[in-house]
Length: 531
Image 1 (cartoon, rainbow, N blue to C red):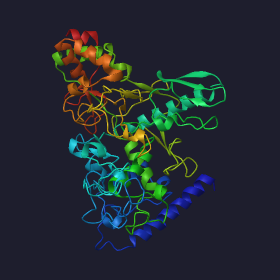
Image 2 (image 1 turned 135 degrees about the vertical axis):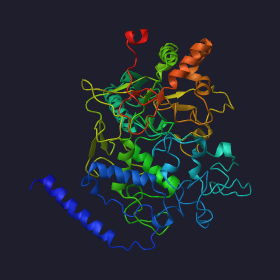
Image 3 (image 1 turned 180 degrees about the vertical axis):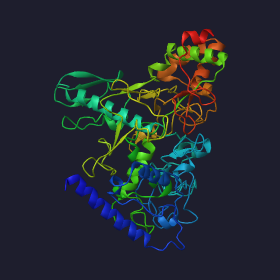
Image 4 (image 1 turned 90 degrees about the horizontal axis):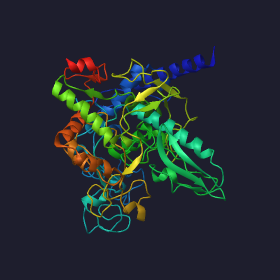
């Protein structure tokens, strides 16, 4: 028997035994959202269809206390409570700011069309970094840091400064985004590795410039000239520890490397569901009496589910007036410089559309599955088995029309009190002066799907696309000034173009459709426009 066949046979026997064990438990009186979890190894034995179904079940599960929902003795960061004598049990088991704050992932990720994994209304905004508190109370008499009101510096907090309120983004097309980030990271690291002592190299990948990296005469690394990467990707302690230069495409501040890391973080933060790869097998660190709340195989399933979601497309109505406006707006969007950051499409080559788990750049701390700790699971993102529409390769390249450069940019005024600047910087050590200095750098928003996933901007405080455009400043000021200089009609045309960038209804086959969901040629042929 071949080794692979032998492994699959062993897995099937193991999974069958595990299933028999679970089925032998009486269902009477059980109140759980996920009656059976995948056992480690089972993710390689089940079909892709079953793996995706299980991932969706985990994403839509309304977790209960009987299966580990809640985290009585730990924060959303995974750290112990500041005050273990006040566990997060009823009536302290939910907290809108410091969490747990949701029953299911789909409770926030559900727009448009109610699709699990999509964006969210302003009511679903997440208070990023509020989870470093036990249970936010805003009780000014509480003087224990990060228990209920006082921060790490023993300063009083308020709603606007205790956390960063962020809009919920959809995960549509996220597998392609992660693979772009991986390939670009590999390119940057290759350039880094070829930088001679005393020399400098320009960091460029897929036509996107990330500035310049330099090595001093003693071999140490100088990252002052590197652009668009988060602080953790620039960290270095000397010649033997070069900066990773990892592109982190998730979180609007560019903090998270992979869908898997994002999922490990979120399940604990928002639901109190702790994965074994993050917290250990057979452990109960949150003190809720439940062990192994989410298996490694579970995390793989829910990561693959998100990675294989349909990609956004465009909806262009069959109205000559709107068609003319969209065509002009698309041209103006480029001419005023918006495409310098919102790059219309980036290329995936070298079969980069084969999504693999785990991501080779997953961080080891806090723990996430690393390459070599389990077999690699591959999924072809272009497969017709997956939700449509799909991107397809042409001449060995898949163009990903996400309208982003995957770089961090400061698009704020930089002035104190600018409401677009976040109170805290999640890419800095919590409690440090840099942490409290705030954050003004955000990943270039992926515009595909943006039009029907309101609200807009990183904070979700804008209800129109026009508000978002006119709020651009800092590195984007010249484009915003150019937009302001356009005629009213030309501005309206730019908005009309942005309105076409939508998540398409489930089952749509084509990437560009009319208002009835029928495939549409775009841009139109000259003879079409003359009729």
